[in-house]
Image 1 (cartoon, rainbow, N blue to C red):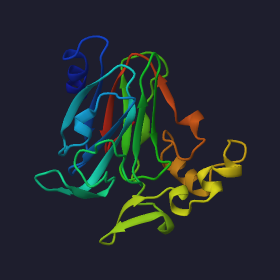
Image 2: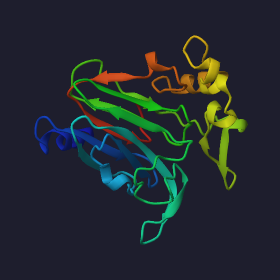
Image 3: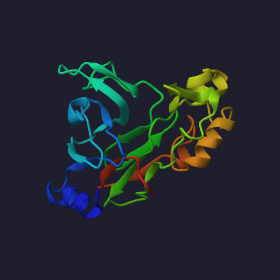
Length: 237
């Protein structure tokens, strides 16, 4: 999608004070975004929808919106919206209906307020390249996310396969479930939970994404008064 068009959507259609998320599919295939809203906030796209390649859709959020957005792949749904996806599935339905995506799935997480907080998380694993880009606003306002395709470099012990192809990459916590990887129990603080060899590889490939539970300093971003573009399969930051 052309950036000029994105800016027209973001600033030309909506009044001042509204926060607009524009979800863009830059992949060569259809992605089925899933959305989960907290605190009774606006449900974006009825919780889930199909987004063909090259298409985008804007949503206006309610004040104080908090939630997550992720991509589902290789989905099949019937006329009633029942079905499933190979990655990121949510309760076997097109409209996720307050259900989060089944990991591993790359997550965009946003909390809006006087200062917005946002990140792209690989803490539970990865299924698609994804970025969150603020437009306008004041503050740090950097792009968060992961442009690299981690499926190509995913270690065998973390790989999820379908018909012989790697479709997603688990995090070490999801794969092994131990306290040292999940930062739980005696490892439930930054002093005792260090990045693992797996999260270090994720970080090397995706320096602007969360890769384990205490990755805040280099992964959590803030901005005020911005709109946001959430892009699947971005080509750059």
